[in-house]
Image (cartoon, rainbow, N blue to C red; front, side):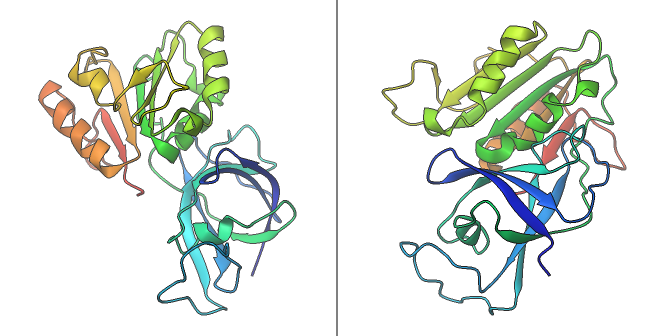
Length: 257
C-alpha cells in the first residue's frame, strides 16, 4: 500500500513543514499548479500532545488528502509539499511525525486545473496567496516556461507571523534577480520581528497599491476561503470573471481548503 518515501523534512515552524517525497515509480510529467493525493494508514502515530480523536479511523484505513505541488516539473526525481499541521487533522496530525526514510502513500495521478495554460504568453500574472496556498505559485516560479518575454509577475503572500513566510529568502532573491518580479509579503498578527506590511493581502487592492488591468492581468487566488471570497467581491466589478473549463476567464481560483 505504501509506495513513496520521505527523503527530506524541513520544519519551518512547529505547525509548518516542507516535505520532499519520492515515489517508488518514476514521476510522470505534470503542470505547475497541479496537485496529488498523499496518504497514511489510520494506524500511523500522532503526537502525544495532540487531542485524542473523537472518531479515530480504523487502523487499516488509508487516510488521503490532496496537496499542491511546490516543486517544478523540471525536476521529476521527487515532489515538494508545503503542509500546515493541524492537531485535529486526520492526515496532517500523522504527517507531523514522519521522519526522513519513512514510508507513505502517493497517488499515481497528478491532476488539477489551477495552471497557467489558459493565460496568453503576453499577459501578466498576479498570484495571491495565504498560508500554504503559496505552494502552487512556487512551482510556477521555479519553472522556466512561466517566464515569458515581457510578462510581469506579482506574488502576494499573507500569513500570521513573519516566521510563517517559508519561501521568503528564495522570493527576495528572485525579486533581486528579475526586474519583472515583485514580491509582497504581509502579516496579520503582532510581531516585533516584522517591519514590513501588516494586514491582509486584500489591502493591496482595497488601497489601490496594486491596480490590476483585466485586459492583460490574470489573477490567481489560493488559500483561505474568506480571502478568496473577499477578493472575488473586489475584482468582479473591475471586470474579472472566474475561469472555468466551459467559460474562460481572467480570474483563477483554487478552492482546496
